[in-house]
Image (cartoon, rainbow, N blue to C red; front, side, top):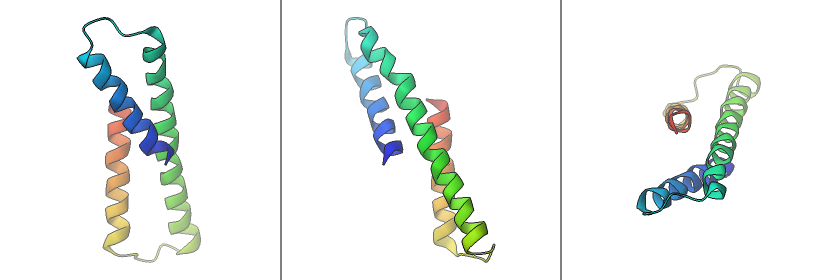
Length: 84
C-alpha cells in the first residue's frame, strides 16, 4: 500500500507542478524525494518477501504463471520508481 500511495502521490505532485504557471512551492518540491524513497522501500519489501516466500516456504518449486506475472509487475514497478 505504501508503494501505491507514494507512486500516485508523486504523480499528483508532478501533475500539479506541470499545470502550474508559477514556480512550485518548496514544500511541494520537498515531497518528491520523500515519496520516491517510500515507493522504493515498498517495492524492495515486495521483492524481499517474495523471494523469501519462494525460497523459504516453497523450496524453489515451480509456482506457475501467476507467480511470474507478479514478478514481472514488481520488476516494472521497480523500474518506474527508479526512473522517477
